[in-house]
Length: 288
Image (tube, rainbow, N blue to C red; front, top):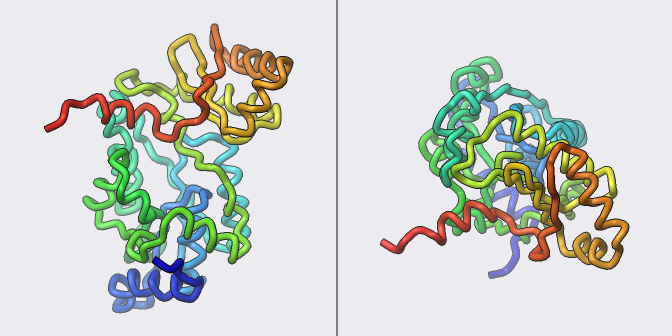
């Protein structure tokens, strides 16, 4: 399939959104669930072109599972886009089903966000539709329970509707000069906790301290997986090669994680594995 041009992507997003916004009294606005990542940033940019900049609002969920550095980055990206940014406090940690941390944990997180938008933000900001940055590759992944919450709340998926893959998203983001075009994926802090280990504010804070310490060392694409008193570090390919080649850097990584409160730390030689805990859970299930 030929990669869509920017003009074609804008047209496709407009086609996806128009039925939900064109008849809105007073030219209703679109709320975009916004993280400051490449998908939601491109969605905001395309929606601004498709609808007009005054009809798009970015909504950032703020909770213990959002790292402070990601919140700062989301604010910076929103300012670059000149899009209004609304920060909504979500309380997924109050939900026992979320804290239980089964493989469908993300469902309860997204449900909480979309419910907050419905209850607290829609009327206040004139939102007549809500969208999020699911792309065409995400649709094919089995580890996306948040998609079910989006369906339950009638949340739109313009990027997926337009057939935009992750490669398309990054290419279009570069064409638009978006600062997130090459940003690594940054899932929430709860993704670092193995399924069926309860999610607590204390564990999330420990993960955040450890990851921030590694960022302070100049490392970027990384995860610190939380195994009680062990912090297991996953690194992107370049960083893993650097750590393997430099014993002092390896020791600094271990010291940084221990300094964040873990009794032990190790570098995972398999490198960074997106969705590691959820995919392990899903593949361990017996076939129907």
